[in-house]
Length: 296
Image (cartoon, rainbow, N blue to C red):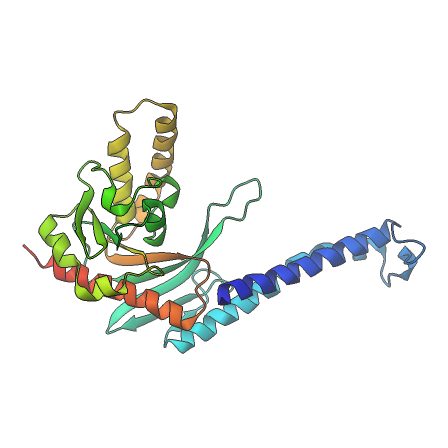
């Protein structure tokens, strides 16, 4: 709800600014005569045009400033700190810890195009592990489509398999659905015994409709490898296109941390209760991952 309100406020500000901009330009060009003439504008036409063009920019800045303020208020509500430097003053990063485990929260935009599409905003919630893992996994509701789970797990939703649930995904290379228990599935490159250990009661409890999935370790890299293996024997045009997408994703793979657990939620999670539930998900998954990692 808070995300919708923030979007609405920003949209209203920009909308009003665009209307004012159009009105000022219309007056300067004489379209509003004889009711309003250019001589009624207290400044010269060049200054008026520059001012009109700046109005939407100022409105967008004010909207972003209001959102940044909401981030700060949410951070204080859950005992986190607000850092304004790393992603810019208008995109603060929230940091804190739960039981001594470092947590990081920030927003980003994915899917924009040069043609002008602004893309989709996500909130990234991340918990640190004690050390990097030798395996990776996506854990989530077994009946969720893989595209949605990849999105929630912070992997690569644009090239994830469509309309295939986590429980029914075919084996791709060494990656497969390893375990399904109580409606929760584990998809990854880990042994079955480790996957079963991973599904702790706490983790199964916090995976819900609002928290459908979580990525453990280098889930993005795991998915790239799995999809690459799936496409190796195909020469179709769509497979060629998919391989190019995978190659592009591979370029960013070195930046993907293997010592983290993360989930990505669509929109800005500005409600303290909702954000705490997402934090609880990554913390529960991190504890389960470290417990599973202790297996020989």
